[in-house]
Amino acid sequence: MKPTFQSLEHCFPHSGTYRNGNSESAVHETALPFSRFPYRERHIQCLWADPRNRPVELKTTDGETVRVEHPGDWNLEAGPDFLNAALLIGKEKRRITGDLEIHIHPNGWKQHGHAADPNFANTRFHIVYFQGLEIPGLIQIPLQGILATDPRFSFDNIDLTAFPYSIPSGDFPMLGIHPDQKIQWLEAAGEERLRLKAERLLLALQHKEPEQVLWEELLAALGYKNNKAAFRRLATQLPLARLRAMASTPDEAYALLLGLSGLLPKNPDPEWTPETKTFIRSVWDCWWKQPEELHELALTKSDWTLSGIRPANHPVRRLMAAAFYAFQTLEISNHWKHLTQFPSNHWNTHISWKRKCTPTALVGQARANAIITNILIPFQAATENSELNLDNLPAEPSNSIIRQTAFTLFGPDHTAKVYKSALARQGLIQIFHDYLITHRLRRAGKPMWRDIVLNVRTRRS
Image 1 (spheres, rainbow, N blue to C red):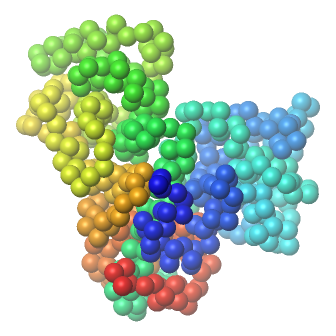
Image 2: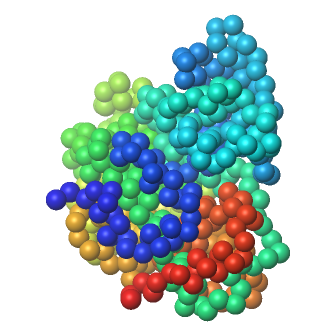
Image 3: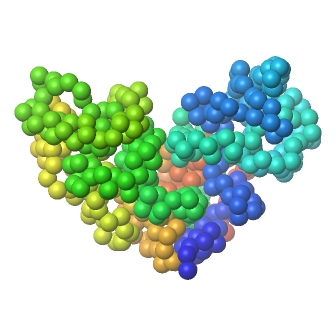
């Protein structure tokens, strides 16, 4: 029996405990099965604010064309999501100005009580993901149809932390709560984060083969935050099945990936090592023979973020890891040594085209831990009806989001032992996106938080 959205609840049995106290993360639960949207409204806010992600050919529910003169000013206070937007509507390009509100479903306007809220009196535009009944007096612009026609777009490529948000300060809502109860609540939130990831994968599996879904996720993970979109684009333009059909060795696969990336050097550099010169010649010998249509799909350097990237994490090295992953059985098991162990290759002994180094792993253990927790475990839940081992997940290194959320919840004198486990750290990230980045922590009083935490059951009970 194939996994379903309902069976994911059994894979992550404590996620519902956290979700019951968080209405936003449960929004999609009220949707019909064909209208699932396992992302947040903030994803759409970030899409709207960034012209690199926002579709150009927008249309209203009535089919009128829309041109964005000004998307509006991001509002961090009460009221609509964007203030003072200016859009050109229809063939006549009628210039209409006003505030702009964003929802996943059109009925979010009614559910959130905006009609009776004076803060929304100047709202003129309603940006929604799913098309539905219009709200009288609002120009509604649905996004699902236009985004579905762009194979390069993915909500997973949007960095939610790169856009405006405010961090509350002053009152630490979880002071005085027993550490064990904090841990239980954080781990329930962590299960919810992994469940949502599994749900996104389950949606992708409705349209793609399992290995292709995993291929795209692995490449996106190799790109980290800055180059995730470019790596995912490579995975979609050169699907795993086609790559395996065109290349018989990892070196040939690397030549295809590097050529398609647009990062293959065109001219030799006098400072290259002799090994690099020989290696580049072999890469070009393979790449120039490829079909012209593949060359036309190649990315350019402008598609990549290369400044500030550590040499060990440079895309040209990560692509070699991808080439080896392509020739492994992308199966899920408890033996994940293949994520960090690679046969001898050029990048084992070179940190850049110009510099040799002592043997250096293409993928370090910290990145491998992130892949296991964020990709392989959710993928297992989305593809297998097997029990997950969530108690011994490898913990990712702490980061700024984890530290900031812990400080905001627990105060400056908290012990880091509270979020020592992988699930607890995943939980802090989930809470950051559900409460901190959406300003909901300020609206949720301290008694409410205490009630939520105290009602969480022990994970092993």
